Image 1 (cartoon, rainbow, N blue to C red):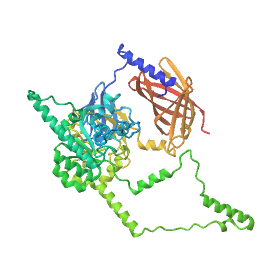
Image 2 (image 1 turned 90 degrees about the vertical axis):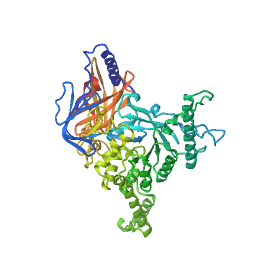
Image 3 (image 1 turned 180 degrees about the horizontal axis):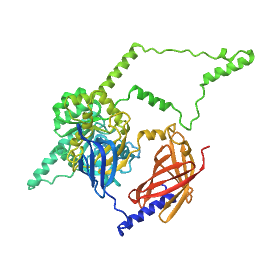
Image 4 (image 1 turned 135 degrees about the horizontal axis):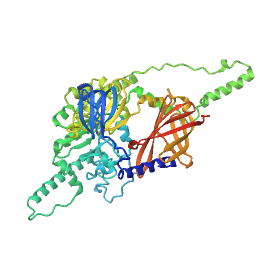
Length: 606
């Protein structure tokens, strides 16, 4: 992370303020963990509408939900202005916070490919997602902005990557995120080519063998504990030991089964071996519906849906669109050649250009019978995907959603498509809150807005499933995040500026007043297809810092910069108001307060 003097001063000040708080409590105000959300429409749980009321949060828990609550003396009051409060979403399975490995996968060098070491074969059930959690991962923020407060996360890998953990989507370090560790085993029908097991059949055979060996080890250990006389000490095996909770039905297996063939395979293995099963990230379930009901297995439906033809057209247009650095495409070589020849001919004959230009023949494309039938099959298949959630609800099967293959930004649109295909709004809320809470065995502490439960909720400006609604605030264990709405982001980003005041673009001088110091520098605001802000301190002209979450609305500009505050990352939030050729505003540093910043314009864009 770059550190110019301007940001370093903030870091030093915050660092020494934190030290001083341990010595002189009178000089640093105490941060309150009491919040009153006032005047909000409250949906306490799926299908239960409390109506207009207040929500009191204390120390990360819901203290009270009532029609009217007198604000405690130390409460921070959030005026909801008749917005809508919902329980925050719970993600049944994903890689949220789990960083991708940057190391290139090399072909394993093993002597016997039919009997490789377990880690080479992708069999590491003793590993824990806890060790791979990265609180700086952008996926946490993306999930939180989509309305999630909790994720069940698993390690990346092949057949048996390891044990899953339940994390809270807010924290200053990776340890803060952890709610519960080692709550599941994660399994995939994913081989380890070119070693055993490399095929689906081999993976199934290996899984059977591991479960049976683990069960035998468990029974032997139990017998040995009762009477060790005349018995050999059980051999240590970390792989088999990690699977003992599975064979004893104390730990569920989350099997990644997107295809219906995977679902049938998983149900067959569960019936044979008898462990707790959660079918996960399922994208095709209808052919296996009767077998699912008989098995008693739990289900996490994928939040992902196939793209519509309209979406595909948008993707193609975006792909074909030239980048900002690419010059506009000229006419094709053939057309250029024709025009050049025509030009020479005109010079010789004096004929009018219009007479020699090549004619463009308009052809109306008509689908043949085979193409028409293919389109009909695609449309039918798409409708079946969209209607699966409704069919599960009608069959009385409770399910949650997993985000392991889905994108947070597509969640609401996909849910809307499922609702149009027959899923009730109550069914959608259950799949996002109470059902995953039950599957993860955390329903006693979250999933609804009841007294004593975790203060995990979000506030939407309109009913969530209403068109153009936006999430305004997300609370994770009482920690509030203000969400910059999608309509504002659209105004400030992309190829146009929307309602942004164009006079903001250019180079500005700034002066920030920090206790004991005044710092100066320049701020460059540009929009070359995407709004950007760069800060450069006068004292360190070789180091620039780029703003994130840049949003411009009229004459107002907000953005954030992360600084190193004595070894701890802290986000500084800038809120600037422009008037003519000058601006004033504040820089918020969390619990340490805000500092004034002002400046004037030095040059406009060329």
